[in-house]
Length: 297
Image (cartoon, rainbow, N blue to C red):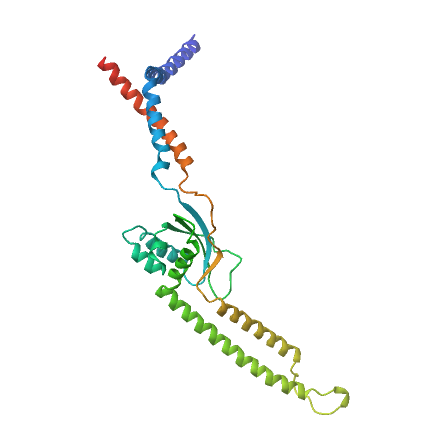
């Protein structure tokens, strides 16, 4: 008897604690039922909201002029990608009619060409790239531009490169790098000349051991090591000459690509997003309007 009473007491306690959960579930159920009843009674308002907002998103294509968006990949040999990004951001803020002369001056292009630019953006990329060299730290980045037409794309690309190349910081770094490479090359040439003199001495002092003439003191110089050192100096000089030939700070990996059809903005994406926003707005606004209509009636 005591065990039965204990079990009944435990069941009563469990029902007591579950009663608030059950009551909350019934309240939520009644609220959802009432919510969907209001939606069903105000279907016209719901679809009207969806139609108006979706139509507004569709009408964007008649307000915004279509443009072209294209990208290119570039490498900076001296400037960090973040520094280039800051310069490009400052440049992009000059787009528009108000600052058009300043933008044209910075890019060294005609004002009518600068007027084609709508937006310029820079996106840093991973620096672990196959073009890495030992004498420089490469910063790889992606440039994206939005232009009104494709006619002056090459001029705009050249203007951006000129803008990045001619910053005071870039010019000083470039001059310092040139001086360092030239000094290293001159030092290598001195070493090569000394090796030439050493080769003549070694070649003239080689005596066949079978003759039995002369006294050999210490370890003789190995001619092969001299030629190996000469080849190493020669390869190093060729590498320096290559670096001097490509001394420009900004190097094009992939130029801006031309497009035939406008691809910006993406009006279909605007339409889909507008539709989703319209449904969410209708689900929120319709019950509010429905309750007010029911109270007024």
